[in-house]
Image 1 (tube, rainbow, N blue to C red):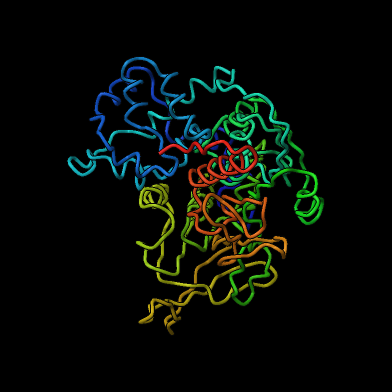
Image 2 (cartoon, helix red, strand yellow; image 1 turned 90 degrees about the horizontal axis):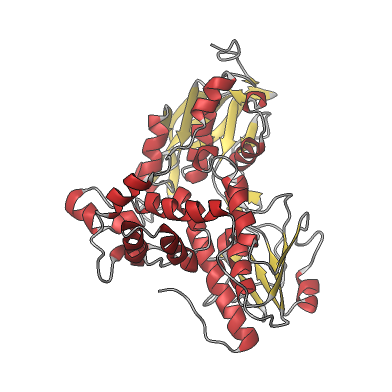
Length: 452
């Protein structure tokens, strides 16, 4: 056992390199050829399949599974990529249990759906590993489009536009492309540098230029982009992190979960990454679960998620909640933080139990409890920062109509920064793809081509 395992405070090296390597292996290893054929044979190949309707990108799921069953996985991959160019990552991170697999007729009949996510990964991984890009650009149109943000929405938009012959420049604030796929998901969901490998493969279509360290409002402006390009797509995600609004949250080792996940994702040596012995994560979404589970995998002895509402209302799916509890994370619901105690650094967090008002709101009760904590992660949502004042907002995000049209002519938006989405990678891909189709129609007069 590492001597640092039970050390108080926030320290690195709680686990040995061997233990960390075992903890951060692929959480869902890929299928082999035999497993994929057996899994594919379970599909009923439904007409008007409910799994297709449940997929935000409307992948023809029965078709690609039939293609696997008949021994043509590359054809299956093409079926997937035509609808969702991020089919590889979505196979890893989509909440399939509430989307395609949740709608599978075998779920209702047997409680055991076709393994759609695993089959999608089987098909797409093979083509991405092959290296060559299967799509070819159309004849150049001479039109230039600016995309702000190299996350799933921006890259999906850029790829579709490049395929149609437009020249695309992506302006990305961070050193690497990928957005949340690179910086914001649990490491065990996309191992071996898959996020960057997928982006490199996607860019193989050509016609896309990446410019890093370019933040909207600091290095570039919407006005300058509109003046230089024929169209602009905004897909910069959400840069700000919501505060707890609890007394004492400025104490040391009260951090945002997004930064913790980003640091872990970029770490070359996990033994050098510090983590607390007693960790508290405040929030109920996927970010909260990813931060909590990874803190536990790094060697935290006690990890607790605290969420202000009922467990059924958590943003994280029940599958992810069960994964957290199965990893040793405790989940406490119907409680909200009121004070962070400590002397410089956090020592305890005081919570009040919550109760639901007749209108659905919450109020704090007089019942209180405290949790020991030497590290606290905020995971209570992100907010849009640095948006141009000329853009109309809706609920704190960029207001859009139809396939991503904003209040400014010639400017589209999609992904987490745009109103109306559900903050899923697959939804961001769909919004970027559909906005690209609308941009192309606007620039060329060609008909829109959207799957489904």
